Length: 252
Image (cartoon, rainbow, N blue to C red; front, side):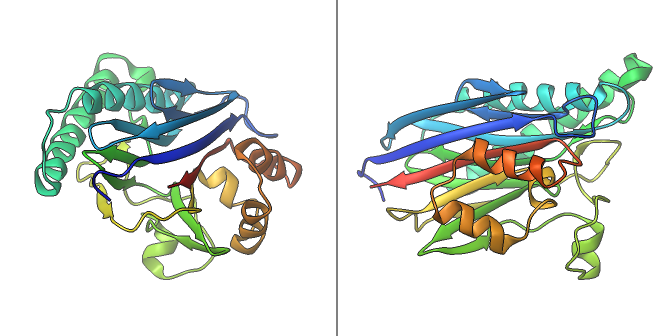
């Protein structure tokens, strides 16, 4: 993939849904932070470029989930843009582990300083482009999917009780997150080596996937739906949670 240019068509949407009073989700696309809004962009990436797309689904008491997802994405964006050049996959992974340790300390300290932020946390799913390579990052039960040749595949593993127990029905009880009083957070970081022309990648919170089957999601994506279309479909189907989707269509 090195020395190739890759074009991305990106749409993102983050909605409050039909039940919740606050939106604890947030999306990062490059330098854009999206909440209660939608966003579209097209860009071309070369080997020397870096780009981050991420979805965070916050949790906690009144407003603290909103703060956690925002703090984590803003901190991640700054950290990622400040990384040195030329890191190999192993060194990149080490840097992300260091970032996870530091952001956990930041969230914990904020909770100790102000009771309203105690125990706040967030999931994180991200797709990072660094030094000509794509990496997926996952902590929690937000998901990364890929559609290729009209076949939908989940690329991340849910860190949830249902996944741990082998149940197909999704549970909102998660076993790993950033913050949230979790003392053993971890991030699944995987190098994606086979990006192909026509691939579709979807980052989303469980507010989307709980409202529709993978089969329905696959149909919508192959028929050309953008992120806002996906969120609107989830809301029409009940919108029991905040709904976030970041959609990347690849052209090479």
